[in-house]
Length: 165
Picture 1: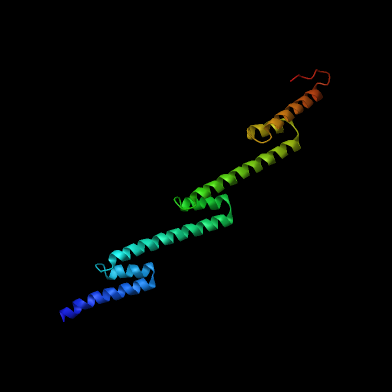
Picture 2: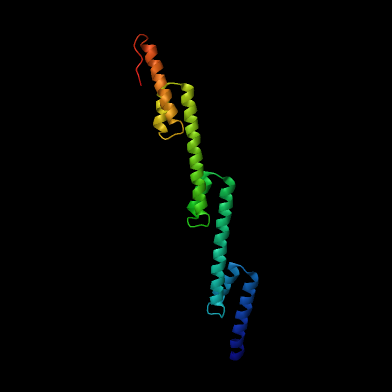
C-alpha cells in the first residue's frame, strides 16, 4: 500500500504540472508550486512564472505607451515616465516632452510678441524682451521699443531735439 502511494505522488505531480502548463496562466502555475513545493517541475514552474511576469510587465509598458501616444499630451508622457521609469519607451517619451515644451515656448513667444505689437508701447516691447530674452522677436522688440521711446519723447517735448542713437 505504501508503495502504491509513493508511486501515485509522482503521477499526481506530473498531472498537476501538465494541467498547469495547459492552462498557461500564472495562477495555474502558482497553484502547482504551492501544492507541489518539492515537485519535479518546481524549477521550470518558477522560470515560467518569471517569463509570464516579464511578459505582463512588457505588455503593460506597451499599453501605457500606446495610451500616452494616443493622448499626445505632456501629462500623458510624464505619467508614462513616472510609472515606467525604465520602460522601453522612456527615451522617446522624453523627446516628445521636450518637443511639446519647445512648441509651447514658441507659442507663448508668438503670443507675447503679438500682444506687444498690438499695444505698440515701449513698455510692452520692454516687457516682451524681459520675458523672452532669447525670443524670436527680441531684436525687433528692441528696435520697436526705441521707436516708441522716440515717439514718446517727441510728444512730450515737441521743441526738444530728438536723441541720436
